[in-house]
Structures are given as structure tokens and as C-alpha cells.
Length: 452
Image 1 (cartoon, one colour):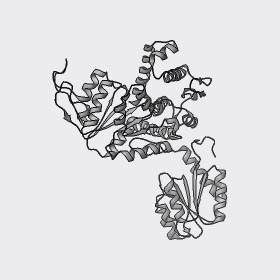
Image 2 (cartoon, one colour):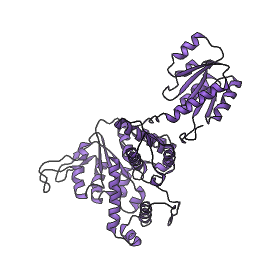
Image 3 (cartoon, helix red, strand yellow):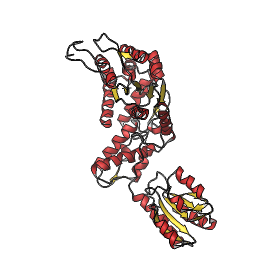
Image 4 (cartoon, helix red, strand yellow):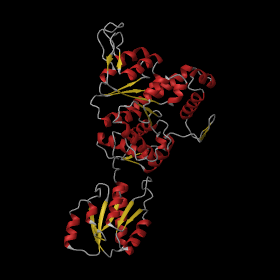
């Protein structure tokens, strides 16, 4: 097997044959070429296998105990699997029928010389190495195959048809807004999806933007303004960074959830509204309640159903799938056929990605722009570094970790230790609260740039 083959997984082979001697010989040769081998001795067993997963190569015998191998070819994804028909009883009819199947690339007659099998296995492995990765299928603009991602997807599918308020929580950059959009789309609600970042709008302006205002209600209110609640009628209102909303405004939002009505700023009439509220936070919701950032009564109304969104480091090889999807988008826009270089794929898999999916997208875009040829590369030293070890009060860093990355870890850890109290954290670090505020604002600004 070529040592430069992508390390994500070995090429996969399905052998569908009840001839034990042929199966043993073919499997031995394939194993020497690094294949992951699956064997099926019956048609029904083979059909079950191809419905469970895709294979890079399939050797399919025509004469099986419970039917013809031709039936299996209808279930093979011919964009992903190279299928080769093998038979010890060749006829013109079977050859013609096989060739009419788009999935078939060859027709071999037993006995097959070992050298011919080696050629077949090497050709498929070579094709897999050189072919641009097929972008993974996206589900509501989300990509993943890990157990953690699939668990999140199942929760979305369960809660979407209901009217329950949903609280989405997870680290920054992990895709909380995409989860909210997926809930809206899967719900079938005919109103729009309206998103507002509660941490990006000053408290005195958020009330007007959320509830709207009447003409003359304050200086500059030259006309009636319809707020986000009205704009999202019969749809979904997504409140990101809900823990950044001022406590006084949380009280008004609680009334909307309790009674289904609201009042514009400067208004005197309660207005009914039918809207689903999906909120999100990158804080631990119960810690936010304990620290007073989120009213406990509002929390229980927002959290009709909670969806934790896993960090990218907890999603196995999803980072590679996402990187391929991001690169496919860039290739489509740029009319290119770039692929991710082998060592870069390994770096992507092992990196901790503290900025999660958002950080990964930015890294792939930067590498794409800097690519000198069709190979997209990210130098290992440019990848995010993970602290070697971490306890409740200490962090140990690997040699070579950048100052910026260490600063990020130390600031996060210190804020966590002091319950996000910036004044106490600043005193412990020997800096000002303004420095902390500027650093957090800079990280948020970079995140917003990456999202765009």
C-alpha cells in the first residue's frame, strides 16, 4: 500500500462469493494491499452489508446460493464503489447484463490469476488516493458521522415537530445556530427564522429591536418599528448568547413565554404573538443561573428541551469530514480541484480545535488561499495546540505552544476559576478588566469574521 495514502481509513473491500477457495485467496492478496475486508457468502447477507456502509471495491460473484449477484448491483452506490463481477460460469447473457449496470467496471472469469487480482486492488487503491474526496452529505448544512453528532441529530428530529422551547448549549464555534436552524427547518413552521445575538446589542437597544417600538417613544423613534418577535411570527426566534441579556429584559421575555404576548417599547397594548423560542449559550446554563446571569424562572421556560452540542474534539473523525466539505465549497467557488495533503489530514484529526468548527473552517480557507499547487497544506506548527494536562487549578503546556494559545488557555481557566468574575480574574492575572474585555472582544470579532 502506498505510504502516502490518506491515513483516515484503509481502502475497503467487499467480497461476495460462496467459493471458499477464491474468497481465501482474494482476501490474502487484498490484505497485503492494506484493505479492510468484509465477506458475504449469500446475496441477502451482501445486501445487508452495502446498506450499512459504502465500500471502495466490491468483488461480486453472479452465482450465489440465494440469487444472482446482479441484484446486488442495484444497491451499490456507483459513485463510491467500484464493482467487479466475477464468475466461474461465464455466458454472453451474464456479461451483457453486467455491463449494463453502471456500477460495474470489469468482468473477470475464474480462475483469476493472482497477478490480475493484484492489479485490480492496486488500481482501486491508487484511484482512491488520487481522487478528490467526495464531499460528505450535509444534513441541514451540518456534516458528521460520529456518535456524538448523530445523538444531537436525533434530539433535533425528536423535538422539532413540537412547540417546546429549546435551549442549545455548547462551546463557541461548535454550531449552535446551525442546530437552531435545523430545528426550524425540521419543524415545518411556515414563518421565518430570525436570529439575534443578545451579546452584540446594547441592553437599551435590544429591547427596541426585540419588541419593537412606537413612534415617539424615545429620541430618534421617528416611526413605528416592528421588532424581532413580530418578524418571527409563526416561525422561530433564535436568541443567541441568552445569558448576556439584561435581567430587566429577561423579565419581559418571560412574559412572552408565559402568556404569548408582548408590548412594544412606548406602547400601551398587549400584542399576541405565536412564535417558537430557541435560545443558546456557550456557558453552563445552571452555572449561569447560580451566578445570576440568567433568571431561574426564565431558564425553566427556555429549557423546555435542552440540546448539548458536542465540541469538535469530541466528534472523532468529523473534523476530516468537515474539512473536506469546506474545501469542496472553496473548490466549487474557485473552479479548482484542490485536495488536502496527507500530513495535513493527520494534523486536522489530532488538533484540539478550541475554536471548534468555526476555527477549522478558517484554517482550511487560509490553507486553500496559500496553496501553491493542488495540495492544501497546514504546517503542524500552525495547528492549534492542546495543553498537555489540565486539572482544576493547573495547566501544563507542550513545548512549542504559542504564547497566544497559552494566553487563551490561561485566561479561560482563570475566568472559570473565579466564576467568570472579570474583576477577580484581572487581579489574579495582574492585568486590568479592560484588557480581559478587549481580549474577549478580539476573539469574538475573529469568530464573527470566520463565520462570514
